[in-house]
Image 1: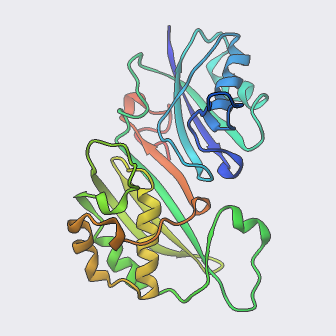
Image 2 (image 1 turned 90 degrees about the vertical axis):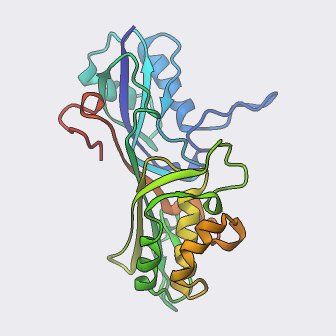
Length: 267
């Protein structure tokens, strides 16, 4: 049977993450994968189990998640995402669908992924819009962005990122390659942390963001980052920031596996 890929966006606020979760003896938790499998099964009139490129955590958002499934799809491919959206909840949207090689694996075939973490610098006696709480981390203290930029540059390269991973990361190796780590500013006194790499450990981006925030607060010196990486000591890095500030922004695949018309880049 043929294999297909989907590009998805979702507001992760009310989900228990991407991955399907069915606790024994309890009702299944609400997950993005669970909702997508249900919608695909309704559209295709056969059980479907999709595979996602990134297992985003509870509360984390996505602008360009990629999922793949194998099925006898009788819906014209150019109409599949619209058919799914008629059955998906409003906090998940299918943006595009295309056929891929039979051996396409959205995890192994990904060449790089890009995430953004956004922080709002709170000002005394200035109220933020209430829905900001879903998509930003609000910091209540002064932040030096230039210090954060210096520290972010130290993250780039191939390193053992054990100090920036949850203790239960579940991976055999904690070595990862970070292609870019940039800190910038956005309107409304927001700070963005953009991180891209060949793959990420459990909570890795949120810990990187938490460490850079501590640098911006003056609690960690930018020059200490290489030593923290080398030591592999989680206690020396910053806090794991809350999930709502994080979003998956893009995933890169080789041209023969990318969405038509978007080349190598699915961003």
